Image 1 (cartoon, helix red, strand yellow):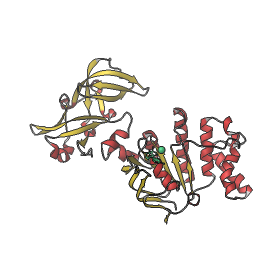
Image 2 (cartoon, helix red, strand yellow):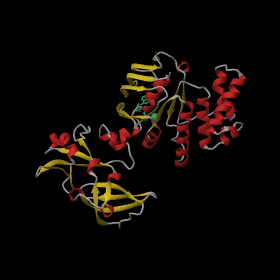
Image 3 (cartoon, helix red, strand yellow):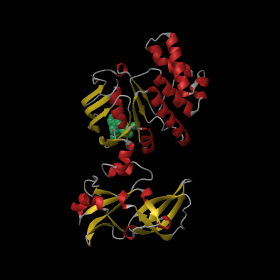
Image 4 (spheres, protein in one colour):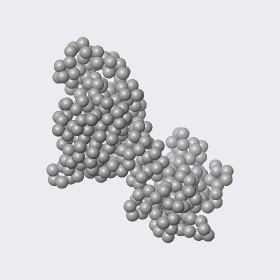
Length: 367
Ligand SMILES: Nc1ncnc2c1ncn2[C@@H]1O[C@H](COP(=O)(O)OP(=O)(O)O)[C@@H](O)[C@H]1O
Ligand SMILES: [Mg+2]
């Protein structure tokens, strides 16, 4: 069993920089956990502490049932794949993959068998005799992953392994790592700043900011029920639209009022939004929850927003509209054939059942 748990783990670097702040996180056996957050938020430091490459300032780390704070990296039974997968340039792919096993004095036939097995899984059997300089970026990254799998570790740690690859290859290898997880059935902790990788790969996602974990949940829960404005804005592409304004009550109805835009709050949200009547809030709505009124058969009149269409961005399967309502700009994601004219006013419909509201001061989710 290879569950990993971090209990109240902090890292303060000499000089007082608190890179990781009281992180408590449990990764289950065979789980694919993604740590995601902007650059500098403490992801690598967290991973390096699990690997044993960085000392823990406070707190405890467990691999399986064993507290590993004092266990050296080489004895932790984990393998790590980095962004800068330094392969030994003078060794062949086979030798690169075999190197760690050789150090550990595995018998020769076992080494050959493990390297071949890994090469098979990663589709690199045909390049085993090449040197790294004769490989493409994607092939090199596969070799780096291969070097980790031959060890058959209890836990895999990945630190932004796809960052150096071009977009198409990133997508391909992302799928491969996903398949690899299904096939190998090991525990994986995967660090990335890319929310798409987090959404598509993780069984669960831990979103970090400023050394602090903001929310841990499965991708859909994170997307639909972000805990605060930061998570709401970080996960999802294009990012959630935000507008500041206030909650008002008129003729027994509750509205979000931005000055120019006024939309009705659905009844399901009344209870939670009630304490904010007469107060400022931040309203959030995702681009796919804003529709072009032309294509909506029965639009509730109180949720129609008039805005100027500044840019039309065809994406192939869909179209992004960059809209301006005077006080705020926002993005709507509409159907592939919707091509409104640029610089014209148009009517949009906000799906208020999908609205999000955040406390202006704490930025915590209200509903
Ligand atoms: N060896 C170090 N000494 C001092 N500060 C460090 C060191 N390594 C990282 N940091 C700082 O710790 C913070 C978190 O870094 P890091 O974990 O690398 O973030 P991420 O991987 O999320 O980009 C950053 O402010 C970074 O500058
Ligand atoms: Mg990093």
